[in-house]
Amino acid sequence: MQDPVVFNQNQQIMTIVTLYFTFDKDFNKQQPSWDVILQELLERFSPPSISTDVKSHSKTSSSTDRKNSKPSCSSDSSSPAGLDLLSMEQWESFEEKYRSMDNDSKWKLGDVFVEDIIYEYAKGLKYEHAAHSFILNLADKRWQKVFTQAQLREIENKSFVPLPTLPQELTDFFNKFKNVNNLDDAWKIADESRFDPVREFDADCAKRTVLNVIAGYRWDTINRIGRNGKERDVMRLWRAIDDSFDDLKADVFRSDQLSSSSSSRHNEERNAIDGSIKQKVLGAKPDLIISKNMIEFAAAEQGYSDEAGCGVKELSERYLKLPKNLKDMLLKIGCHLDNDRKSIRAVRTVGFSHTHLRMTGLIMDAPCGYVCRVRELKEITIPCEFERFAKTYIRFLKHVFILKYVVKNTMDIVKNGPPSTVEEEDDEEEDTEMFESIVDKHKDTLIIPSCLNRIGDRSKKILKKRKIDEIIENNATL
Image: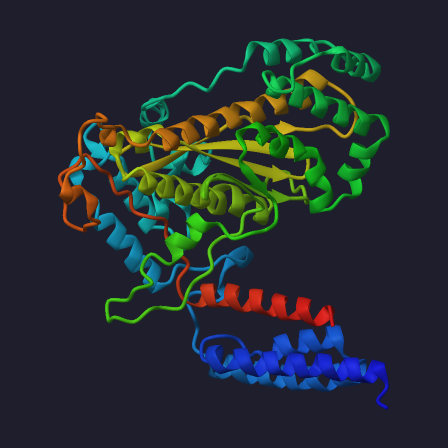
């Protein structure tokens, strides 16, 4: 009978070899040699003697491939910090989205259009930026070199919607912690507060959250998480976000699932012009998605490594990945509202950017033209030790509930439907309105171009990596 250990090793090697030849078949032309990937997998699963032999082969093959291969515009080797140069397909898509914009619907800023300024700025960028998706984040300092201060001020104030106000009982509860610097005093204030768990859900939720975090400070849990915790551990500090949406009966998942809004954007041209159906492309997988009735309203990205706000992961997620995901959600909501112009101007999507013990809230809207604007709340840092409680954790809770009410307002708009479709009960729907049509019905609609997709090599890399991870995970359970 074969030794179980040898059998398991052989089984793993066969899985790896199968994986290697499966992927190498389709991607060998424009990608580095898959011998390198095979080497890494064998080093993980196989005895040293096997990996050593393949290692020498990998070096030889990789060297040969580099000599014979042509440079690719999306190769990681030519990109800083792992970012990709924009491909020709992406440039063509960017130009096409810009040309689809009607001047009559653009955002007029004095004698110029905001879309035109963004377009000219984006044309000079070799690497992907939110500008290629016509997203304008007012916290991105790079825009100071593109717009004047007067223009930025006008952009910031355009169709300004004040932040929602907190319920009085919640405001009163938060005010009790002013000038409280003693842990026991803070516990007593929260413990003695009484709220109806139904009628005063938010205040009751805030009370439970405060008691939990004070207990975390008492037993040094937060300090240990801050010093040694990984990404999943740090999530304990942001649990208030998940709990605060319970009364809205929203789905709040951190299960690393695909965003349906992002998937819709990546596959919007899956029906090719030649009649074929393209391979499905996987969308983004944010660290948190808040949805209701299959409609997404908010997302979050999280990282546990704090690099003082200049880490590659934080910068790319906060200024590119998360804003693009929020725009995907906003456009999907607009589609659900028949792309009614007034409704699109009213809805807002929300983002949470977590990095270690810091959090920034994002609010996206489409105030004018085809531009999606991002405004960020001031960053909050949760200290490792109990200090300045009212100005740190209580302030964080205020931001959480404010952003929750922004989401709730958008949920209400979706529930009530677009104003243009509200009819008297006695009025019958026109027969022509019952059909789906690509013919312009001259309604007051607005079609905002979608975000720029990752096209070509980069999408294939992501797909291959996910397949590799899936096979390795399945193999580990054998």
